[in-house]
Image (spheres, rainbow, N blue to C red):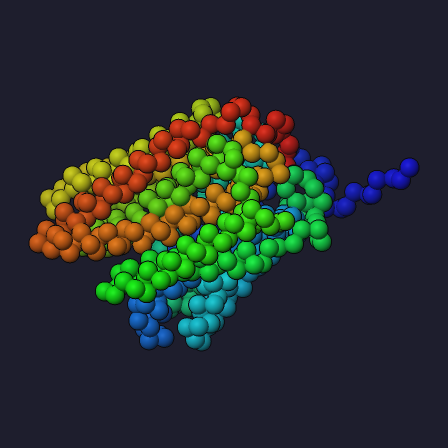
Amino acid sequence: MSLPPPTPPESLARLRERFGENYRWRVLLTVMIGTMASIMASTIVNVAVPDISHRFALGQERAQWLSAGFMAAMTVSMLVTPWLLDRFGYRGSYLGAVGALMLGGIGGGLGMSFEWVLAMRVLEGLAAGVLQPIPAIIVLHAFQRHEQGKAMGLFGFGVVLAPAIGPSIGGVLVEWFGWRSIFFVVVPFCAVAMGLAWRYLPHSSPGGTAVNHHRRRLDVPSLALLTVAVLALLNGLVHLHDAAPLPALVLLAVAVGTGIVFVLRQRHSAHPILRLPLFAHRSFSMGGWVAFIYGMALFGSTYLVPVFMQLALKLPPSQAGAVLLPAGIVLAVTIPLAGRLADRLPVSRVVAAGVLLLAASFWLMLTVGAGTALVLITLWAVVGRIGLGLVLPSLNLGAMRGLPPELISHGSSTINFLRQLGGAVGISVVGIVLQWRLSVHADAPLRGFHETFGLLGAISALAVVAAWRMSPRRPDGALRNPGAAAPK
């Protein structure tokens, strides 16, 4: 009888033995810092777009790709995360993604041409897409069921700080040191995340299996089809603003066609990057609808609210920011509390309450006019942020608790992909509808904004029914023994 192979020095068992019962919280901190860096990279560059445009003599149609390129790359790479985890394990995948994010930050800051800076933004987006599904995978494998909501709440509290402080830090850096400095902000976060990952993340893949270097290949043709579909969709939605509709219609037709071919290929591929059996689980399929609709409303509102405050209400940027600051603080406080609720109540109810509050906040904006007190506007923003806080720690948990363990990493990547895709669609839809309604109500622009807020409210309300049906058929789903003290 052959003896079992010796335990590697950095195996899961050895790491757990070395660091004790609280090891899982150190792992959570590790992935939280890397994710914060990726989110900060996505938001901080926006404040420097005017300076970058001036430096490289860019028009708006080229400058917008600094954000659109990042978003497209992040959307596509999210579905690659399960393959990377299977091929290289937690540590290898995480170190590679954080290293790519750091390289993109350094390269962007040193860039001497727009094409190079854009390439570095795409590299950052690819890294961010790999990083963002990992925390939910860690939580579902590492924490007992009664701790999962708390863990996601604490993770969410840390992550919301990144978009909150990113633009503020970026604005100061641009004024003091120029646009190049903002690319370097992610470097110290990445350095800390890499040090922690080398110390705390195991070599194993999700589920505790050994790293697979050969058996499972990446489905490159499917990835190419998905890339074409996403790029055509984003470009097509952007060109819907043009006077001539033909380019937009052609691009959208390409997006639909390649999207259909991509889905058909996933049905027959030996190693699909999108696992269609996920949608056979009611909790996941309903969670996918919530994620897409929620992404549309969330990202669409991030575009609409600042424009509304500055163009319709004539508030200066400083006052508009001051109105949103209390809402941001409330969001940071709500997320940990909502995480605890997700441990005590059915997550379907928590998510449904969250999207309903989000819809209510949009509809309440219909009461806002030029003479509305800033306190009331702040209160309506707070209502929406409470809704966001309820949804953020609960959506992934509710969608994936009914999945078998081997599909958890694919489920996390797919949910994040659907939310990001919904966000890309939401920004364009809001922009198109707002431009249309403002042209209709040229003499009363406030009414055009109100109608767009009403649309966002209706979109959010659509998610309530799906959210209510997210509960798996069995209360513990496939995670019957979730008491591991560290990621498997």
